[in-house]
Image (cartoon, rainbow, N blue to C red; front, side, top):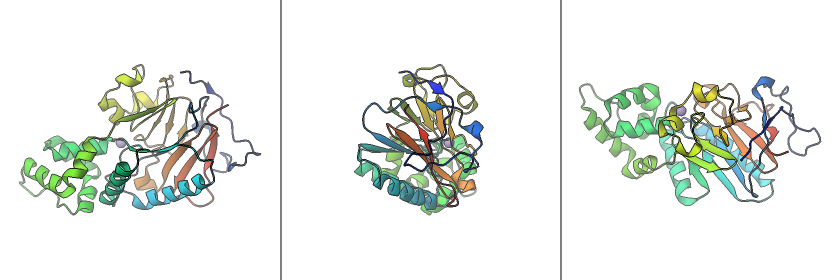
Length: 287
Ligand SMILES: [Mn+2]
């Protein structure tokens, strides 16, 4: 599968679909370094949502924006992908986890990927002392609070805390978290939480890299064999590059949650939490 980069093209002003220029968005042009000269092989559409981190308010607003957009589009098979890290930091992890679990159980087309925060919670619930320490330090306390679980008590054994965590979150939800996939391959796109190890086949990536990789992936300009749609590495604004689209706009502290719609003909970026003047941005996925 060939993915060829080309110079960035701003939307054609005669387009019927929200022709917004990068200037109007105050989006630095350097962020759009290339376009994906590729499209989904058949009539299908994918929406991918970046790191939610406990922000129910932003997730609800983003889903509303997607819903409004989708109502005006031609019908075609559609998938929704949550790119992981939907828990921690923000206040509503329990509510979000419940919503996503039910959506997954009800719709095959709704895919939730595992992020490093979900992996940390799983390890913490299995009594891993280091994971418990790191998870609580990096937003896990907010998740505990959302479930009504008390933080570790002084002198509390790590296994005792793990047991309380398991009970508080519930076996069903914990098993669901453990079984979350780490990637979704929809050529010419490949969805995962953090990114991929450059130079390694997409089907031989380690879970460690898919969930945690940072600069080795973010700084790579090589063709990975698919365009990687990911979160994890916070960017000032959605980055559309020739080999990846970065969707983690730091929702928890910036108040901006981002998503992308990938369609055979054209694609949109959605942002929830911005002022109304910032409209969805259009870019092309096929030429
Ligand atoms: Mn992450």
